[in-house]
Image (cartoon, rainbow, N blue to C red):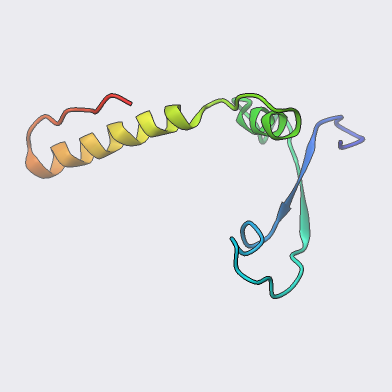
Length: 90
């Protein structure tokens, strides 16, 4: 918790998630990231932080993200073919 803003501070390792199962070469440094009103316009960072620390659902969910990507893929297909493309149900 950041003492000045009383906002959560996340610790993120630089370079991914510890090697994703590969042998670690060196210890990754920790980087503090303060979640403030300026950096969290829609509350997404705070939602993610709370879901990780306290459990529960994060918003937007992975389903919301999948729906957004489906729309982008349909738009790309439509642009390439020149025809309307169906957006699959997710």
